[in-house]
Image (cartoon, rainbow, N blue to C red; front, top):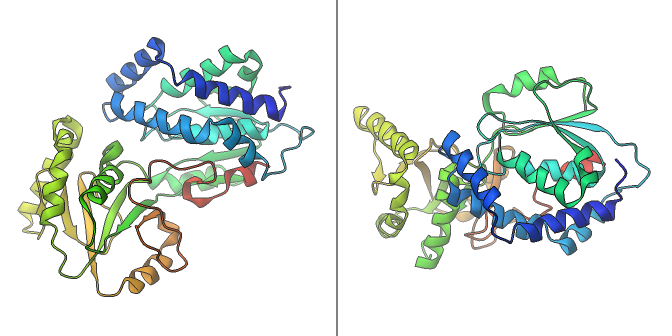
Length: 338
């Protein structure tokens, strides 16, 4: 592995330019991925690629971002194991390219939910610059490593913490996002929030699963507007989740509101099942800030069109467009790697 930092940046930028063009081979891989995992639709995968290209594969952005870290040309390359989740189209790719920029080698344990797309993107890098191939390897078993990063482990957290306890590691626990409404949102705001909620079928840590709304808030106009996302109900897996959750709610006589696309329940829990949203009323938005401050270990993004004390917030419609400094679970991956 003998590429300089500048060469590594340039090959990623070239990948970005490559992804701007139509590509029959990539389209075929996207279709193959969908056949094996119906959650990873062609539309969502293309949207993920466009966002990744714009925010993670721009040469100027990469140079500015990399300059924040001590990436020496004389650093000893390490072997970094990456255990990927595969819940969304490009989950794990940010980690893979972070390891590459840091000058280390990735040994990648792919998810059986997404075995084709990421290896194909890596193969494109090798076509652009053959030397880059040495930085990536896909594996079945993890051994002889220096560090490890595990993404979105859910119930397996303790297993991974024990299994990899002797290695420097990042083991990312489950997180979700939340959104705060004031009652003064426009239809454009509703549209942007709908994209935040429904893209990737709500399976990403970026998707808000909990809404905070002023007491007495009328959900009817929002739910009527969100019927524009009715295409989700034509997706078998999403519809099956909706029908199952709806049956549970009806059988148990639980209060709820719905527009036939999403089920909403009043609940304190930040996490909601697929096709569902939780909501909670507030009287003072400062109380919301205090609640969220105590739950930051569970929150990826706070989506709000107005400031919320000292908490970092992002505007409606931006949760699926993170930048190079937006790391999963807010753990600085590059600092860990360098």
